[in-house]
Image (cartoon, rainbow, N blue to C red; front, side, top):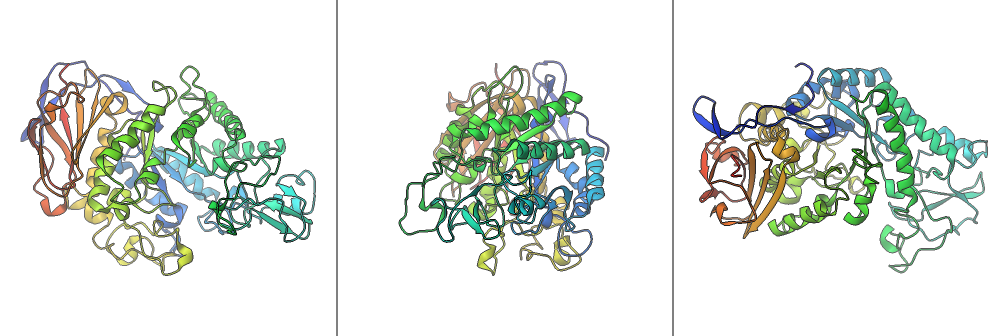
Length: 578
């Protein structure tokens, strides 16, 4: 498959017309107006957890050559970029988020040449690469930490050290993984701070030398050809220098939530540091403006605080901090099927889109899953997972897909309670062969028992409206002007959710989801909140279960009488009535 051109569509602003589709039906069509969008805007970002994507050498762990072997699949899927979780050298206490060398690849995943080969293969297919970047903390096996313990300059203050006697930490601050945020190091005779595991000492990001080290790490990977970074754990960057105890919320508890986080979470300095990191990216972009380098940031925050991570919008900058402050509200709001109602869905979307600081320039994003959260199909079932994927793909902004979502993978039960974060990290299910086609060896985590039915090969060649084929169609629709830059209108009627995307001179798209347990017949034309609909359209794609395979896309529908099965979702192409 050849290199994908810059995503754009062009044509005349035509009046109502038709075109033949598959030789047996006519699809209403307006020739789309010309629209150009950045690579990080027009197509989904696809997150890969490297240990679990594809194992090329048979050791049971996914690796970089394994990812390279599946680039054809990624291109055919219709994504625009690949975000890979950490592959840096690491003791793997926290699955690579404990970095012992920021400018090398861990042997688990290959070596730097393997990384370069992956970059070359992605570029050949017009795909971009986003790396996880972990500047908050390193591994305690990093040379910087070892030299800091020995008070060897300039590393003495590369980490956050405080005086205190054994058993009496400087403050009552609690680690994300529970217990004290402080660990006494007898060799140095001081406590060091760790917001996560004690094997992950926090870097002193108030030290300009440490900040410059982090910038040089970014430059190293940018010079190799990386297109951007997803920056991990950004609200944890700084702690208040007064080192005051937090207010206790739960007495006699060592848990993370037993104290407030006034002094240790989301301090204003976080934004200032990210702005410096953004300048590194912008400097690289300035070398070749046809290759913009972007920043995504991870922060679990309320929406008013989250949108501050865009920074100040200057000219066409999309903000001077993060291009995509990751919107994790779908993950927080919809943890179970009971949480997922059409009214709550509309409110969650409205609250987020309404809070964007400059709606004409800042760019939204939506996530349904990641490596730390239960998979959507396990949270609220296969059918609603497919419906929510459809909604996310048709919303304004960039959808971010966690590997396996495109086939409806579910969590895998773990025998060991310590593996509580791993149910959503199990190996990708490629086919129904041994170990789901992931490895020729013994996989590092168990393969889900449903792999014989839920796998890429089965869905790719059989069901027209399988999870996989619906995803591909939605990825194609995302490049349409109305989906990229059109107006957004939503309505809820009983158990039915409606989302319309319209841009004058272009085909419009209406997404309808029946969240109920019974079939519905609904009249869309009765709502003034869905303007310019016209009175009919053609179904582009639907999420009908495989037992209903005859109900595929392509049928004509009248907006005065649209029928949906329980938990079914459809996208309808229509000519807007301006």
